[in-house]
Image 1 (cartoon, helix red, strand yellow):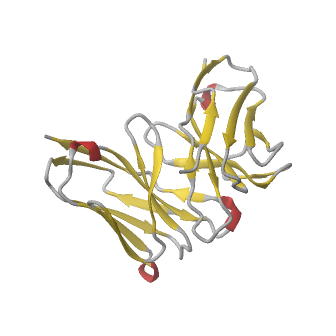
Image 2 (cartoon, rainbow over the protein chains, first blue to last red):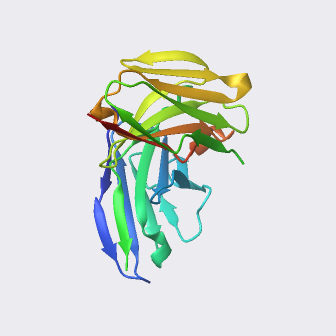
Amino acid sequence: EAAVTQSPRSKVAVTGGKVTLSCHQTNNHDYMYWYRQDTGHGLRLIHYSYVADSTEKGDIPDGYKASRPSQENFSLILELASLSQTAVYFCASSDKGAQNTLYFGAGTRLSVL
Amino acid sequence: GQQVQQSPASLVLQEGENAELQCNFSSTATRLQWFYQHPGGRLVSLFYNPSGTKHTGRLTSTTVTNERRSSLHISSSQTTDSGTYFCAIDANNYAQGLTFGLGTRVSVFP
């Protein structure tokens, strides 16, 4: 079973502050993703990466930056947190194979006040 | 872009009842997955099923690719089946991950 670990599990941030969410995977997966989930909604892709030192924009990248310093680590950065960024954030990883199953971390619940 | 529509939005079952969840998508998907989200939030993959029928335990997934639809059948539901079920498809960009539907929330009562 793939292991994807997110930290912190929950965080309260102030509006305008900087927030960094971390994700670590131990399965040598090339692809990593950040999704956000709002109450009553599905998951929406923020940023993704298919190789270390490179990130790509997903469907809703505004207000977020991403960093992939190594194959194992993928961070999501909110430089100026806003109320609208209150959500649960999920990191996922997947292998390069044809059956590109996504393995998710447990999620980070972020509240911006 | 890709659209994924799931129905119904919510479902209430009495333990032992069967249920069928539907997923319709806007274009041919080369990857289709069903996920289950625990009430506590953790997401787990149930099926990778871009075409055909797959079974695991009391769950059956059937995808008809040329009709752009997939279904998830739950037989003899149990209270532990309660949670939200998501259908997700690829975004025509192999690296870009999956596009998710809004989910079907299932509640099973004893």
